[in-house]
Amino acid sequence: MSELLHRYAHARAGDKGDRLSIGVFVYQDTHYPWLIEQLSESSVAALFEHRGVSHVTRYLLPHLNGMNLVLDDALQGGVNGALNLDGHGKTLSALLLSKHVTPPPA
Amino acid sequence: MTVVVGCGAGFSGDRTDAARPLVDALMSYDAPRALMFETLGERTLAAAQLRRIKDPDSGDEPLLEEFLSPVLSDCLANHITILGNFGAANPTAACRRIQQLAQRLGHSQACLATIHGDDVRDRLHALDWQAWEGEKRSISALEQVVAANVYLGADALIEAMAQGAQVVITGRVADPSLALAPLCYYHNWAGDDWDKLAAGALAGHLIECGTQVTGGYFADPGVKEVPGMASLGYPLVEVERNGRLVVTKPPGTGGLVTEQTVKEQLLYEIHNPSAYITPDVVIDLEHVRVRQLAKDRVEVTGVRGKPAPDRLKTTVSFLDGYQGEAEISYAGPNAFARANLARETLRQRLALRCPANLRARFDLIGISSVFDGDSQLTAQTLQDAANDIRLRLAVEHADKSVVELATQELLALYCCGPAGGGGVRRHHTQRLKTASYLVPRQQVVPTVTLHRGEGNE
Image (cartoon, rainbow over all chains, first blue to last red; front, side, top):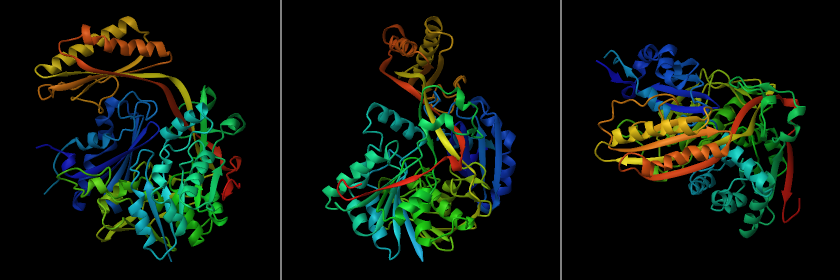
């Protein structure tokens, strides 16, 4: 069975230049180890591959039950360079949360 | 002792009636307090520089009076220091407008300060540059540079407060420095007390985007509910001398302050959480914890600081060609097929009529407007569900006439495109791009200019 990450986590996207960062947090603290399994650097890179992402770095923040994902070259030029309507990438937290995941163990 | 800082704007287009409830709340505190306005992004500063090039008296924040007129009088009368980067590309022009506003409100003796030194465009080739880590363009390769602004720290702002400034008007300073300055000034923190400076800069980081920590950019109905979206309270942060900080908002306002809203903002626009670089201190968030103390009160602890960086980040803005956008709608039965046909027709026309180096992107709004890459073909899976679709073309080229020709091809779809296409809009702009570099701190000299009373500088 597959569900969307949106059900288990919330996220916020921010930009600096052509670099996108997304903070991701689980709603339930017990789901944090599961989140780490679901969002590897390579799986996040695959989700954003069509945007031309060159590198993904994941920073874990266990005290916050969250992580920071930093995606290089995700914004196709960034706020002052992109042809995309959303040059900031502000909507891309929702792209991450649309990732199909295996539900966490009950 | 506690010092309280509120944030009345988190970006240039923010709600202009936000500061009133904040100032009411600030006036109720028996503590030193300040009000910051953060209205300057990479994009807004570049646009402000272009306005100043066209008109030397322009280039400051266009909504200055709207932001300040509801609260300036009470702030001046109640020792609530105002700090804002609403000087943008022209702090002197902003100062003049605020002086005039203060006079109209009966405060002709108000003491204002402008901070200068961030604008290094005239010295660009005399400075020792390094590329910022995410930057691929060499600074020497940039042509048509219209602006170069260094992110200044809190030092000059603290100096302005020490000289008696009631309103501190800056151009480019790091956003958190607008809050850190009054915190340093009132708490008398040492310039190398890194943990305290980190706490103060973090306090600024948490409130610098206005409601993003109090329920803005957060609501997701059914999952993350936010009450009172039309009257969101803007944030206040209470910071003790030991660095303990609490985020809250004015009573009676909408929105909410929870561990979730604070955590989302904590990491906002941060890369390595162990080394968030500001001009004043490098912030280490690795051990930060958040704790809900009461309704709309969240405590943040555990932040650590490391010495300030040797180099300061600088945003360089340069003109680089033209962008055009044009859109047309197709709705009703078979809308997707008609919109898709319009897109393919337009693609063929651009190949026929425009140079090969035209950069172009096609969106089918209603199916995909933002998630796709420039070369991605829109997912076909939703085509049956969508029956109101807007074809969007975005193009970029060095030559304005090529951009106009490309969008004119979309306009021509009125007559030459599929059945029932309508509602065309076209828009052209000169492209203003930004790049980031690092300059040695000692090559940048911030200065304070006091403006006291009528025309007396």
